[in-house]
Image (tube, rainbow over all chains, first blue to last red; front, side):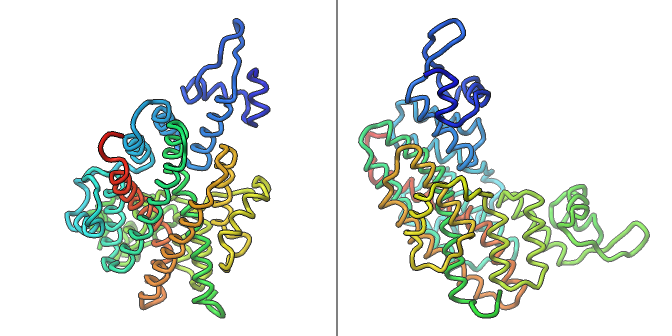
Length: 206
Length: 206
């Protein structure tokens, strides 16, 4: 199909599609004339992946390009996971973290196979450091509950990847699932908070 | 203490503290002269809350002000939860969601007391819509696993709030917990993914 039709079908404006082409998010179409290219179903699909990463996942264009490159590469799944995780995680200077909060996280993760540079390990430690600075260091019930929930979710994530047939669907699920899984969980957590909160505080507190 | 000491103690530059004062994030100090004010432990604590919301929680200044106003108000806990949730959730036009994905979310939430305008309900529906557009509509194992984990986390969130003594600590925990809980969960999920992934794919895939 031509650019105009790709735009109509995907509901993405032509100017935006051209921007994605220039930024390397969307691969070039097949040249069919001096100023014309043809696009296929792969381009349509990729456009939807891009929109999901940018609009729903909240990634920057640079971050989206990095994870899309990982889908297109022939990296193994574990490596693709690493890239997706690094891209969606804040950059954290380990030097800025106290040894105490890192030890607290490692205790919660004990028994898990997690490398020291896992971006999630540092991100979790930074959250605990913020609570410690606020004088709320005793989260001895809260953090393990989060870890247990995170483990259950990670098992479900990997089940979903394993259920895909070919390499491309698997890596796409790794990338999309890593990015959108955060948004899904945050959404469901808000709904669950309303539910639990209405059970506990109903009749007066609000 | 004077501004200079507040800056040293909090490790927040004077210019940044002045910016927070202008933006109404930090309440004014007590006037001690024509060009001088004095600040107390409450200011120090509030500065740490602000840094946590902005740097670790990734909120905008406007969003941080909104949730800080909620801490300072005499709203009930359920209402404070609502404000915190709305502030940290993306704004979603319900019209842009297909009835099908909304029904899918409502099925997962069935039995929960969740109002139709809960921002998490709509955010979850938007994630499912993105997957549906990508031709990945069958997430019949994945989404319920997320919902069960979200419910366990919400119970832990409320336990943590209930464990606080006074109203201010409770509302602070509601706000900080809502914002930083997302970051904590995302971090632990990355660590758990590495753990589960290393168990399943070790020896070749990476």
